[in-house]
Image (tube, rainbow over all chains, first blue to last red; front, side):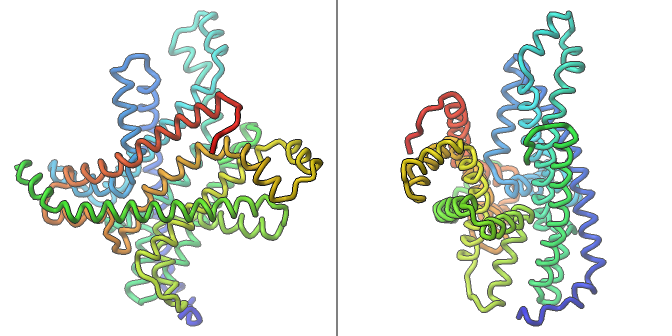
Amino acid sequence: MLEKFSFRTIVEYLPLFGQGLVTTVWLSVLAFAGALAVGIVLAAMNLQRGRLFRMPAKAYIDAVRATPLLAQLYFLYFGLPRLGIILPELVVGILALSLNSGAYVAEIIRAGILSIPRGQVEAGVASGMTYIQRMRLVILPQAFKVTIPPLLGQAIVLVKDSALLSLIAVAELTRAGQLLASDRFMPAEGFITIAAFYLLLYYGLKGLAALSGRWLGLAGART
Amino acid sequence: MIWQQLQSIAGSYPLALRGLGMTVMLSLISLVLGTLVGFGLGILRTGGNRLISAVIGAWVDLIRGTPFLVQIFLIFFILPELGIELDAFTAGIIALTNLAACFICEIVVAGIRSVPTGQVEAALASGLSRWQRMRQVVLPQAMRIVLPPLVGQYVLLIKDSSVVSAIGLTDLTRVGWLVVQRVPNGLLVFFLVGLGYFIVCYPLIMLARRLEQRMGAAHGEVQL
């Protein structure tokens, strides 16, 4: 019964929640770094003229976007041992999050690069710049600005998605809530507390996204 | 080896069909309900009443700020404590509908705000009632902005329906989980599960893309 809502139990379990929160944060940071790496490679492949690079990147992005993260997570969790690759649950989870978010990051980066007006590229060509110079000196600095707010939006999605790792027994924030729910039969205390922690992370990232929009001078930047 | 496993998997096709049926049912019901509630919330939120607007905004933020898995657990485990008996299926529908409604609300608000104020003023000057303004002037124009992300949202909804397997509903993902206990080939089993989702979601993704291109290109009226 909710009238027996036990703050004492929450306080008692606070170290567990703290550990879960810390795990959620650093595994999200690692997974996001992985997603950036995957996304940059995919976006670069996707922007090539030749089909040889473009087709596999497109196929990968479509496959990831058209299937649920949970199915992808189980694919790796049950599938990797089959290939003789035995990894701890945590590593499998970070891998799944990176590979999943990477596809979305790739689309964000691609949209950012394509948002640069054609005249900029032509001016670069007219100035006698090579492809690499144009990318490095003209396109990427401008594209970088517009990608920051949507990338932070993707970071928010990633943090929330990381809750699914509790289903393969990774000891993160949601798992801590499940433990309290099952050990003490206190689902309200467990799940409301972790919801509050997730909201903390959400508002933090959302504030950061709004600030970055203002710093970068983007009008009406929203995530 | 693979052949035997394929046969073994094929043997569990009644289970797979049930799982697919469950995924489709969950998605369809919550898609319809979520769209209705989402449009209602979006219209209310832009309606001008500050209190209503703030309450809806706060609720949408709460839902957008927490993982869907946690929302399902909250609904499935806590509503019974409040004296509301519900089974896993109802809990899944409530959670998915609520999630869809909140995201669709945001999409509808963005669409309504994209309609130039001159249009509303012209409608006012023509003596149209509030409901007439919404139905005949604002919404038809807002649909141009609303439609592409709305279809994208349906894809997210179908994918999110996989998370309800966590409270024991036998949907497509859960079927994969059950089959992989018997047939120890996770790659094959979850490739097939993924294929099931892909067949449903990919056409919708293509549709969203085409709508986006068409809406971006033409400024004409949209046929609903």
